Length: 271
Image (cartoon, rainbow, N blue to C red):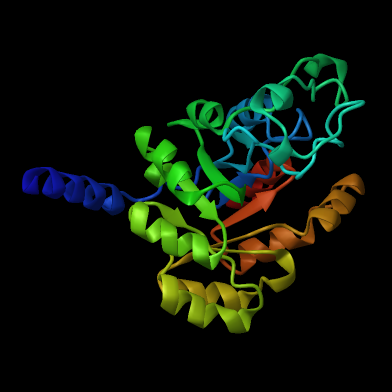
């Protein structure tokens, strides 16, 4: 028994010692809900497109079905995803959820694209792209078990709440919590409580001061872009201002709806 416990501890410590894979483009590119301008969001197709583009992470939202399965879907209901569909994910079985064709509404080329299970998403991503897990409605212990079974503890960042991070620290000490402090004044107590490797934030709360504070504590910081402003800037043929500011401030990553354009911007910036 002692040997088994020691072996488990050594494995956990070894995993914890492994660094995150370095960014491919100098700054981590996180494809929000996958490359979902080119494919239905949160699908394996959107994940494969993000891999093809060279993104570092694919952001996925996870919810639990009525019969205890875990699926990648952002909204609490399926109403927006398929013509004639309605119902809450938590009140539907896996079979009911996966019976929906969520691709046809996006385009005929995506006909019969389905809402994937979290397990299928992990298998699609393993050793190809990191996972930015937005824990909408799923138990920490089960998520950690599925991730650890694939040896992906250091390939998944977790976006969740403080209570979930307390659980994660207990069941998967080598996993990567990525807490969001909200306003800057909440950052020091968050760092003191979790000593995170990664801090996440929305653009509204991002700043040069946040980067300085995170880096002083040994943490990376990955903001969401200003999604609406980026859409408007790209539509007008402009370089999104928030990308320029994020890089100038020393941000370590950006979560984006436009991974292809962001990668092009980062590539040009590095030249």
